Amino acid sequence: MKKICYIVAMRAEARPFIEEFQLHEVKDYFAPYPFILYQGTVGQMELSVVLNGEQHGSDLVGCEAASITTYAAIERLHPDLVINSGTCGAFKADGAKIADIYIGNAVMFHDRRVPGDDAWGTQALGNYPLWSQSEALAEVLAFKIGKVTTGSSLDMQPIDLEIIRSNGGQLKDMEAAAIAFTCSLTHTPLLLVKSVTDLCDGGEKTFEEFSKNLSAASQALRVANTRIIYYLAEHCCQ
Ligand code: SAH
Image (cartoon, protein in one colour):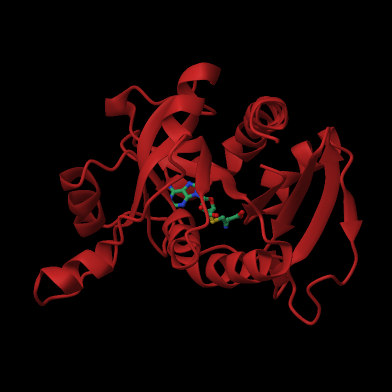
């Protein structure tokens, strides 16, 4: 594994580990698109971090931005492994706590309800493959594992909850399945690294809880990603 590429939605989620690895910004690499590339090397391994960039003064989050950023990153950088690092909601009932780190062991959409036969239902839910070594990595580095489900909203409607829980979903975000879809088209391996900003069944308002915990969760992502990057550089880079 010679090249790894992170896809991150929010600047706040990426800044701590961009600083940790002293990555430099490659100005206008994706121009005229707003995606931002940071790069550096760790041992023999090339480390790229690609952010979606901004529109209307806020970081681009959600599936559309995640899909095209991932497409551009794969086309231009040819990574051996894509890693999506970001924040998520999780469930107190599963034992999740704020700033916990999870490695995704499955991924699907929870808000694409398409009637029809099994083929349409299967396409709508996604259930895309993830890097085959995801669970092994989680075990060596002692991270929790869980199924990530993705939708286009930060809030959670009753129908979302029903679909998430009836499909074994544990972690709720707005990008992972879109990135997994794009990676699946080229069979590019994908690792999901998620940190919990809010508890979907905790009774707090999601946006307030998210905002309060974004910094702690982003620091947890820095620590987790540092361990993951050194592990990959040492064990998988040949
Ligand atoms: N208005 C917010 C925008 C963040 S949107 C702000 O001020 O910063 C939420 C981001 O965090 C998305 O990138 C999403 O992947 C992740 N996220 C965290 N908790 C989430 C949850 N409970 N549901 C969906 N996405 C969540």
